[in-house]
Image (cartoon, rainbow, N blue to C red; front, side, top):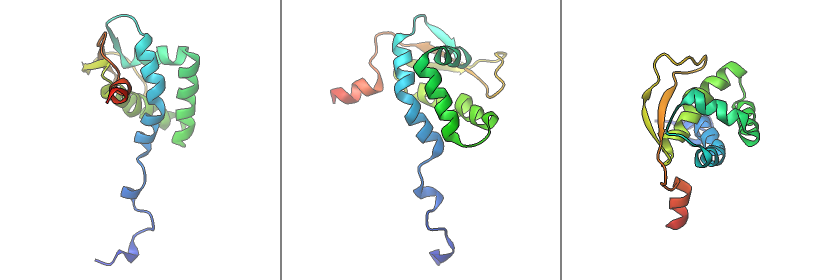
Length: 128
């Protein structure tokens, strides 16, 4: 196979944009999770709390800007992939399934449970 027809940078060589947004949002989301009270919440609840926090709102708006498409598409990525992706990777929460009947104009939200007293992924890496 002759690689001359391929672009200089193939799709596999570029960082995934969703992963890049997730990495950008992780510190803010982990900080918010460390400060949350209660037991269970939906993705919609979490995004509302995130946007009510000064650093959270700044990160949310910057992630929309970094996505580089319309606000509608950027919010679909944030609500449906990036924010839930960070939550799934966090040791602070457990995914409980989809939140059927909970309205979100951008994605299908999920239910989450806080795992109280468990270290975050960044704390576990620091201890290694």
